[in-house]
Image (cartoon, rainbow, N blue to C red; front, side):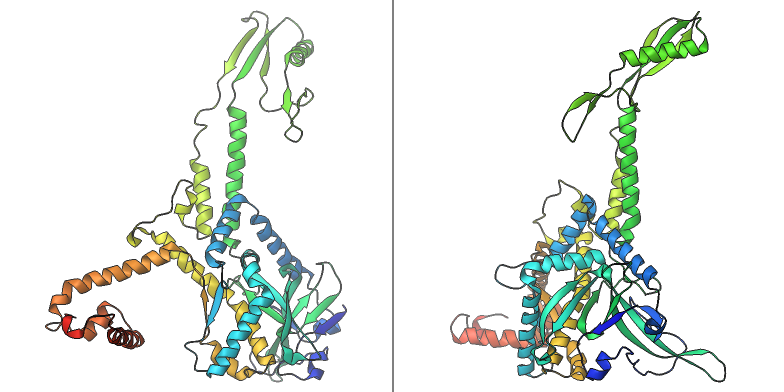
Amino acid sequence: MPVELFGISIGRTKKEVLSQQTPVEPKATSFVLPELDDATPVDAGGYYGVGIDLDFSLRTEAQFIAKYREMSMHPEIEQAVEDICNEAIVHGDDKFPISIALDNSDAADDVKSQIQNEFNYILRLLDFNNRGYEIFRRWYVDGKGYFHMIVDPKNPKKGIIEMRPVDSAKIKKIAKVEKDTDKQTGAKKIKGVKEVYVFREKPDSQTAIEIAPEAICYFPSGLFDPSRTRAVSYLQKAIKPLNQLRMVEDATVIYRLSRAPERRIFYVDVGSLPKNKAEQYVKGLMNRYRNKLVYDANTGEIRDDRKFMNMLEDYWFPRREGGKGTEVSTLDGGANLGEMDDVLYFEKKLYKSLNIPMSRLEADTGFNMGRASEITRDELNFQKFIDRLRNKFNLLFINALRVQCILKGIVKESEWYRIQQDIRFDYVSDSYFTESKEYEIIKERLDVLREISDHIGDYYSRDYVRRIILRQTDEEIKEQDKQIDFERERGLLPDKTQQGF
């Protein structure tokens, strides 16, 4: 199949980038493959020489992503996804939903300042202030996200000039494996692995584009199938509960439609007519008196449609001579039609599979403005789940920032991995539960402090109280002491001699 290779070069020569036979990076020889996250292993060189059939892999990937997207259109799933995305990405009025923190990094101040500026530049390229929710939602539903980082080949030092989203169903990461045969045993040994990306516009297309890994910003969900060759969506474990809920709902609707109305039973006296004549006579009466008014939901019209039968029609039975004669009786409708326990069970099961607190399932549950002690454990676990999602989503910024900083010469590639460990991202949060929890913790600590204040100097030291009771760190103690002395000098606080503590 025709293949085109393009991308950007980081630490490689132009000749190596443009070569179709991309060299496999040499590594220590082993007989097993390294752990591949969301990458399909293929033999190096085979992709270009004899061709590799990737149809099954790509189509399967596209089918799963299509399934996830179809699931997200169901009302229950859509509501759960909206709750998760609203908690994860909060758009502020005057600032970005996310900011970078470099306080723990030992890099020079000018390097920190440049990294901060480049991070803000990446956010502007992504238009994250307006499209942050959409990007996060697409990543959460698909289970992965891709951006093509476009660089001016004539002037790569300008850095990334555009970040263009790539459809997750059209791109796949491939691990090209170089093998060698052991001369003594004849066993295959793994010499090296090179990861690239293969893009195809359509699953059945015979042409593919190979993209250098430096040109793709890839951020998976962090969930993988048992073989770790495919990243899965967080909706994966909701597939079965959703199907069960839909089947139970459909069965409930059918049962209610078929058993709810009262139907009539007609016993028609056919006398001594032969069987065939009796059946014709009963059918003639049935068609004559049957009223089949049908409501068309599309047009709003009511029409008489007698040629179709449905499950709600009356029953007609012939009765021979010598019986009770013609009789009309009523068949009662089904009982317990108002019970929805089975539907509610599977609905709760669906929400549990999505890590949504059960309290949010109740329509009449109001917002609790009470004590933090009233916050449910489900809400705390949900907040931890949101923090884990943000952690995985941060790969978008880490990967883009790495390429940007290296291309612009701010840091070297070897230095970046050291700086990366100390990078933190702060998300805007409007969760009242988080604030209430923090205030309640401070209140409880102050209550303990008041209880033992009379014993300070006898059984407890001031340093013990500040470190153990108030949980202040060394940096916080120094900062608070400095601020307290400053306010005393200004006369904002009473003198030490006038205070007990």
